[in-house]
Image (cartoon, rainbow, N blue to C red; front, side, top):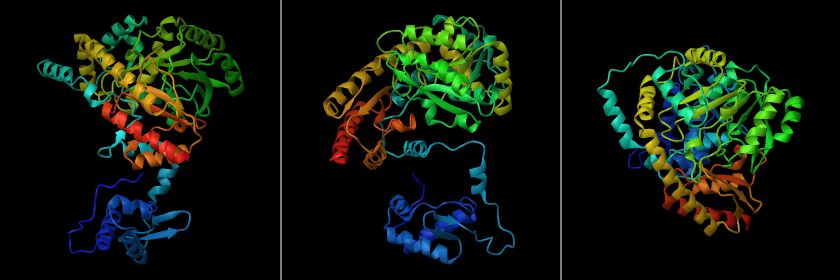
Length: 483
């Protein structure tokens, strides 16, 4: 998806094609669109600018005649020169080649489209995995900010593992869910995603195999792959990851570790049973297979408390436990934690210091105040109530519009409903058709390339009227495509 923050002035006496030509020249001259940059197709640019395609065609022709761009069949139109280079004897660097050779792989194309489309005014984000702005405790946050403004707090860098008072509060919280640990075994990170990045570069070597559920949120990222790792999916059923296959997968692929989201799994919403958790921990202990337990959705239970974490039963330091406030409190706070053996935590803390010199001090103080004051726990009670209402409303709406088009399970917590479409349909065509009507979807194939008939539906972000409106229109789109 191409976005642009400029549009031609249709009331100007300057012809539209000249305005567009000058705009692109400025982008090239300023070095924003460098040699090798691929310009958007004429159809896409004309739509973004709100002009006829012929206007863009004329602008491209003039830029081509001036030797600034070149169009080739099959590879699109690219910048081949800039106005300074026309006068110079040496060519400027081709930054596109650097981008392509960089170590960190780009997001999947669909994920890039989703990330950009989320900021289109008026878009209905039907798959977004975060709390609605209306569910973020603004009043509590203001109380905390006011309280901190009158306290003496440190605004400089914190020690490598993070703010000690915050780690003490996290240790106290962990005790309430069965995990006995000390602040020295906790590393404060900027969300669970950074925890995964630190683990990938700090504990694994290039070529390592990581086992995870299939489907899994991890498959929508290139975090491990960018560090030279490979993901292998293990099938998932209604009780969680199918542990009977893990020994074979471990030996066949020489897997280095296993990553799991046992509590309100992303994207399926599955809650791993107590029995399956015990079995998984036992299998991993037998196989000496380290386990990453990503538990960021734990506090978003809607019907009853979920089983205690596997980390609570880990007596051998096998489990690295991940928690976060991003899902349950606010994505903008960017505070999470890793719990593990002290040598591992110290090593990851050292790597974190090399990358960002510690998470935001202000965010850490805010998180500490929310936990120590009890405001966080008050918020959890309120947000569960709201999410329960949203879940039930979404399920009723699905029954109304999708009863003959899809099947799904009722989640008992988290954000997601894993919708299995019954008609055979092009998920790409559905994505594009919905987007053209202002509905942003999360297709299942970004979490598992074989999940072509699935959508991740979220009830946490869009308003209830928007959820009903978008699901009603989406059902009509599905019916139109399958005719």
